[in-house]
Image (cartoon, rainbow, N blue to C red; front, side, top):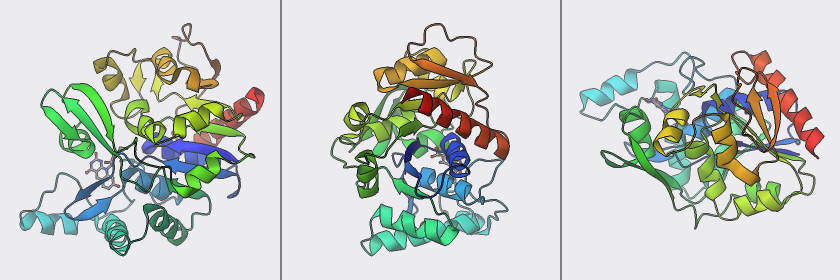
Amino acid sequence: MILALAGGVGGAKLATGLAGILGPDQLAIAVNTGDDFVFQGLSISPDLDTVTYTLAGLNDQEKGWGLAEESWQFLAALERLGGEAWFKLGDKDLATHVMRSYWLSKGWTLSEVTARICSALGITHQVFPMSDDPVRTFLDTEIGELDFQTYFVRERCQPKVRNVRYVGADQAKPSEAFMKTLQDTYLSAIIICPSNPILSVAPILAVQGVSPSLRSHPAPVIAVSPIIEGKAVKGPAAKLFRELGKDPSVAGVAEYYGDLLDGLVIDAKDKDRAAIRQKTLITNTLMQTDQDKKNLASDVLEFARSLI
Ligand code: FO1
């Protein structure tokens, strides 16, 4: 059994590569829910959506989030009524949020909702939220404290960040499936996908007991760096590292995860590797095609086997 910890786009890509190699009973994917929020009364779980849409092959590859071949009539009608439209809900995507909100209102857990969505989309690998309890990422910025989506989408990650909080994480329990996987004696590797360490991975690690479980489990913990040559493949990872006084490089990623990691996977283009203390695998980490995703997944699995 392999456990992948995933945030948005980078996480979804590597999870898809792993799912192309491993069977449904060999891969479990725990997804960040720190980005979740309620918008216009709808419960949105952006990272769960990105992971499930990508695994199902239904994602918009250009944007990275949302569904392919989307239309936007709902959004236009909403704007006409004076609704806020900075967070764009496409017509097809809307169905996911309506059904999630409906099922949650009936008392289902987010894990149950996610399992139902996965089954409807034909996803056979296990995908679950990191927790069924609310955890919300807040950023202390130069224009005040912002919830994640306000910072990320409405403010386009522009305000300078001073601190990040994962509200509720210390009271949140891992979801049942996550807990079961963490306790699985057949768990042979934990892979931290190339998601933003501070915004996407840290909320998962902050959930009660997750970091101690990873540290005490005999399986190796491996991260894939989302930063290549000092730049984030997508999103504000490098900018955030800089603003929080960390080195925006693979060495900075290695230092950020510290002794949690047994191994770090970095890109072949990266020359900045002298300061990395963990064992490293140097390969192509940029996932532009489906073959890239599979190649990286296969490299990471082989690296994991070498660390057991
Ligand atoms: N990201 C954007 O940059 N702009 C959007 O309007 C937007 C809408 C959206 C709707 C549903 C959904 O599941 C995700 C959406 N995202 C959007 C992506 C998302 O907010 C972020 O990429 C993640 O939270 C970061 O991992």
